[in-house]
Length: 258
Figure 1 (tube, rainbow, N blue to C red):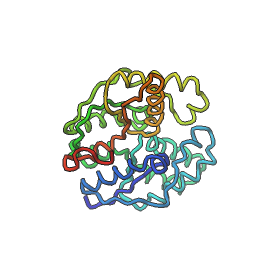
Figure 2 (spheres, one colour):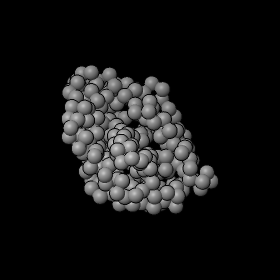
Figure 3 (tube, rainbow, N blue to C red):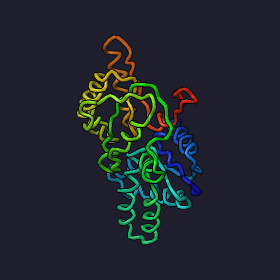
Figure 4 (cartoon, one colour):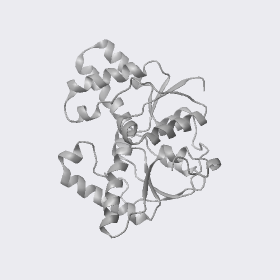
């Protein structure tokens, strides 16, 4: 490829789901990319911005622009955080009136991609050589669809995974109720939404629930675990990030990182 791809790990992946970051790097390197991990990267600032603390989020905006400015592409395995960078960073930079900051932010934002976008739009690939002999169902997360606008890219990538059976999820377009601070400030509504989502997931009978945002997988996975306990048996449906499926190959038996 001849150009360097910087991994935008995101906070939740770095702290709670490092296997997703490792899978993303393994996948990109297998596809011929030179991958770097800028250690200066921090939070994208979405939690501050969503809660109305714009001034407090500016440090994260500046840090992002500085950390990723040297790289040709920035790739993040999170539709939500990539959406935050695209939609919120230019807004926050503009509020400062700092022309240099606005220019720096615009430059890096233009090179920032959600993982499935990068695979299809930049690398031109739908078949990445993945093998995952399991039954899965897919939940399209709100931010990935409505803000990052990943469209049908995740589904197109899943369709090319050898051995994989994709089971439709009823009400797939409905929110899981997480929404970051929404789940704290509107806990009753959040709990009702995720209860509905978990019920539909369990009805599929799939082995795995997959999406492109680990925050939503954490929310739904927690409810699946509680539902299984309430019914007197453990829920057998596991959650998995799309990057981890795409990193699997037939050579490792489709069990990479599992």
